[in-house]
Figure (spheres, chains in turn red, blue):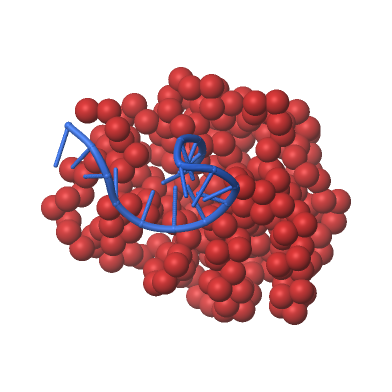
Length: 287
DNA sequence: ATGGTAGCCATGCTA
């Protein structure tokens, strides 16, 4: 069975890339984030083309920002939008979490709050959100996979230059502690423990992708019974290339049997290696 | 020293 997760940065804009990608990779279960659609708009745009490819779908979004979805060809049972104890932001519950049972595994499609700046109310919201999710998952089924844009790089090896991220979100100890506190297996890192530059996200700005200046923030966190079945785990970097890509690449995990080979996170060296370690973050505004 | 992109809905905010 193949599980994939992809922050598509607008499902509507990504439709010309998403549908051919589904045909090419044929994942059985797909977790999407940042659909930026309402449930009605997702249904109108995607129900028919997805059915043609054999997928059932469930979506949770309010339009504009956020929005998550689950697609499955192996069943989509007990769909739950949000999770027990999920915190609100500015008085509203955002479209950041949906889960369902697919072939016996409780699969969550998650879009963790960004956190914006360390110490902001959004950062506190992010930490609270992750803590509440851990409690909800602990009370749930033993066979579980948390898939999505966690907006946390679990270790320094998961960013192009730790020095560039000093004082920024995504790499702070409290964020990393909350990822670790799930007590789940980060299956891509477990499969490729020594590899550097296994990234899943590259900022659109400043040619970051072409220099391979990225981060690994899109994760599949699996409980041990699921992790024990992993036969392949990799980032589909090709989906970040070419015309009108998302700023994230999909993460693909095969259980029981590697589908089209165990494609590793083998990436070319940056086109301008001299800049590695000396490039400022695009979002950095302080001097 | 700064802006660099993309997408939303609106001409600013979010990432």
